[in-house]
Amino acid sequence: MESPSKRDHTSANPSQMPVLFVGHGSPMNAIEENAYATAWRVMGEQLPRPKAILSISAHWYVHGTSVHGGEHPRTIYDFWGFPEELYRQTYPCPGSPTYARMTQETLSKKKVGWDLDWGLDHGTWIVTKRMFPDADIPVFQLSIDYSKPAQFHYDLGRQLRDLRSRGVLILASGNIVHNLGLVQFEETAKPFEWALEFDARARELITASDHKKLIDYESLGPAARFAVPTPDHYLPLLYALGAQSPEDELNYFSSGVEFGSVSMTAFRLG
Image 1: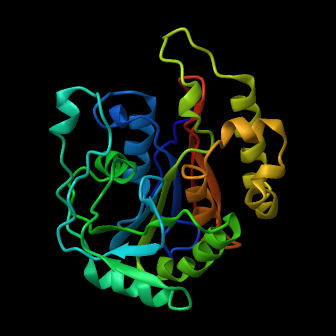
Image 2 (image 1 turned 120 degrees about the horizontal axis):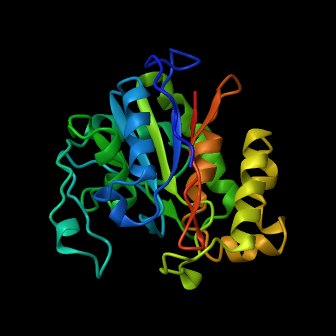
Image 3 (image 1 turned 60 degrees about the vertical axis):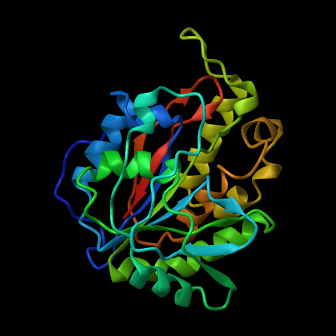
């Protein structure tokens, strides 16, 4: 588990906001005091204050690309069977119709819908609750279109890069390795070798800025088939990489594999 040291709240390029990819894992990370919650909290303290946060979460995985433009996004409890305490959590931040519309216009070459029903799913609010506990920064989401190939999502990330210079923090929330069919809840459970292998390979390619291989992740060998049985949690990674600028400094601030088959890797660009 990596934990960043505190630094001045600046980025390598002060004219634009950073990009984050966060392996969000279990919804329980919203209320459990663990190494991941600590790393998210410390990163939130390091970040420059954004004007708004655009989240691309694995859990708004639908047909079509839409941006949520509501003024008061609801807290969505898109999970079942957890302690009652978790369902009492809220994240009453404002939305941002202005920045949502700006995002829609930035992606004008694509057909981007306007949504007022969604809100903030747990891929977003369990992270922002730790990073920005005052809930005083506008947050809005962009959906992930399940009908599109990986390259499409990377290309959308490239178009979103311009928002960084307008004060928008891009938060991509998923998991590089995410296989719920093989999770192990025993405390003594160890990470599967294929989970460690794929997470390490992905980190190696991220560090080398080899985005082409990460887009074509299915060609990365047998481990990829177990690590990414469905693309929903992997695709947010491609949005983050697409939004990367050449001068961005890379900082990993969380790592580890939970429950045998869920990678908690998180990094900051810029």
